[in-house]
Image (cartoon, rainbow, N blue to C red; front, top):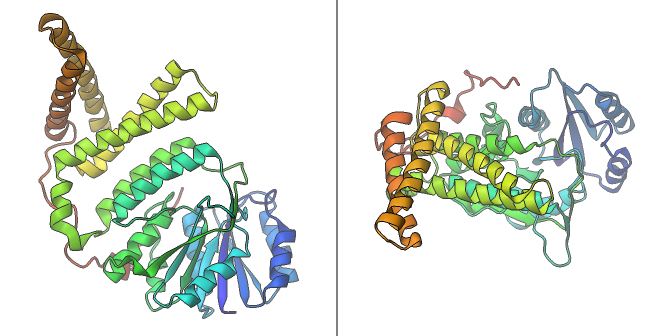
Length: 401
């Protein structure tokens, strides 16, 4: 087979569409499927064995025990496929939100564009295409895609669509050789590894707008996972030598004060986004939704400041209380300053608020830098040297849950 696609499965017995898989295998002749059972506790494995018995030459089953997460299931499955000498390898979500028929379109894109190494399915709602996605997941996805683009230094529309196909080259195995450091956003880490290998040349990446994508529902991703994903994004930013060719310009734009301001803006956007989503979905009243949004925004601020702004090495038990104290102090200074400026000095409230905001921002930066997270040097965030982590496999990363 010239193409082999990995399908990670965890407790998919109720969602696995066996008839759709059979129809696809009947209609194609050069595509094989590798199902990885990721420690499922339901009847997933027996169903996969049934498919393999019907298609012994086209279907492979890897039983991974115990459950180690989707990232590791994909990695193990891809390495298994590469050992069979395929020309193209990829992975697809088990819910078939992206139909298996799209594999042929991804392969055609690789055939048409010889310089492309990775095709990423993109859920773009264009006229003539059928992209059925919940509004809440779409808007959260846009926030996430923006964060991913800033982290990677490239304009990528959709990193998280579970439909990707790779041209097998000498460096393909290096993308999957080491366990991923990210549990929730390993797709972004794959792109980061690729960019590091090729010297930040994005021309080998190609986003393919899907003709059809259906939100199957019953997503296993919880709201808290979005926060965890942002934390992992910050860790990727620190770990990989992204944007090294633009080190001076980016280091200037992303100096610690600028990063602190950017994080504050991101936290505010998240606050408003959560507020709007909860109110529009009828989940909470406006007052309750803004409190929840403020809390979520504060968590985002903390995670990004810890990893992205200050690159702190202090323990969370030490930094979290200090961060909360600084936040409470900032609220008090803002309220008191606004009162004094408007009542005692007679300032217009908007001008007074602008002055208070600038003061709180500067005060918060200094306190968090010197006290909460510890003073860090203005050492570059980027690594000029060639990162050798991808070439070493003798220190595996713990991927246990």
